[in-house]
Length: 383
Ligand SMILES: CC(=O)SCCNC(=O)CCNC(=O)[C@H](O)C(C)(C)COP(=O)(O)OP(=O)(O)OC[C@H]1O[C@@H](n2cnc3c(N)ncnc32)[C@H](O)[C@@H]1OP(=O)(O)O
Ligand SMILES: O=C([O-])CC(=O)C(=O)O
Image 1 (spheres, rainbow, N blue to C red):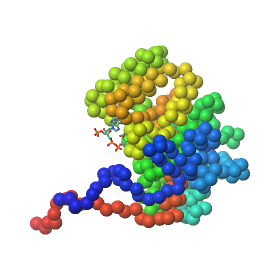
Image 2 (cartoon, protein in one colour):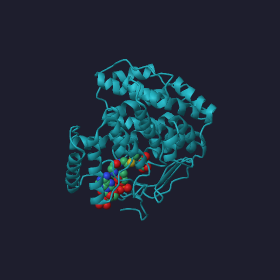
Image 3 (cartoon, rainbow, N blue to C red):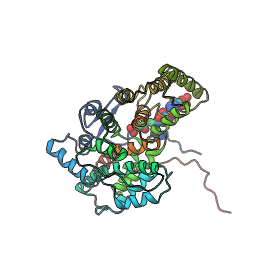
Image 4 (cartoon, protein in one colour):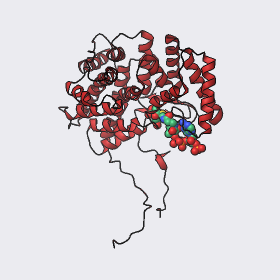
């Protein structure tokens, strides 16, 4: 028996609270961070400035940016305790689990873990933002080395994006690659009450600590209906088969045929569709430009064939458009990241949005505790 009340499965269409951090507008297909169109931020701002904007509500002036960058540089190295723990994990541990574990350790050993003043929360957010690239980079290196290895020391002369790529690959990335990476970080940073951010807010609403909120958010992000889709997109490309020697047209034809079959088999295709946007994700055109630049840079036109073939076949069959994970997956692949590292890259970006929401939730808190409609057996007696 169900209680007579309206159920909105998945909270679809339910407005839960206000936020001043970002505005997702499916009608105008736009996304604003603190009022600024994300495309403009992606075109003009370093990722550090966007992080500052999300936390503080305004873009930084030169001194404010330099102060944040100094903090970021001071916390860039791989923490010894985190390294020791990662080294004890099986080498085939999913990197999402490894990064989640790392955040848990960083929280457990943080000297201000239990403090929730604005100043303490801000410090924890900045330090976590600074610490994550080394964790993600080390996980890729550990996987490739087949076990514990030496991390690549960060370099103070490089900015956040340059240094992230440096610590992962041990060489200075060319400018177009750094730029595409920076754009991906900006686009992934924030997206209102998505599932992982909402998770972080639920945890914060119990007056739990910031690292616990981020650990929970990572768990929510991991699933393929959310952040895990960028990894899943690459599995689709792999299933179709990546053949660098193939022409764009040949690749496109194979992708079209694959999609027709997959849809006939009623498969859900990762990287397509969105709960809020029904006419395309506002971030996709900008991310697609970054992908195009990488395809050009690496001379891999066949990937464009796969990309376009799937996109067009999906649009024709179901009128469903790609989401941000669709162009992000092949972009990270071209840069040289292992597929399992794609969602951890999303963590490194989204930690800015999550922590901004943690601070916003704390500033105007009410325990998040919805109701449920009971549909189990009527009351009965134990016999
Ligand atoms: C950064 C991000 O997190 S963006 C989201 C990343 N996630 C993905 O890419 C996973 C694939 N996409 C999906 O599963 C969905 O589109 C979601 C979960 C993102 C949004 O889903 P919802 O708003 O709940 O819509 P829902 O899943 O009910 O889909 C509505 C209809 O479109 C279909 N549909 C939606 N997305 C897809 C898809 N990717 N492939 C095939 N069919 C799809 C559904 O089957 C459903 O069809 P039906 O009405 O005939 O049953
Ligand atoms: O908003 C959502 O539901 C998912 C998404 O695109 C994001 O978190 O970036």
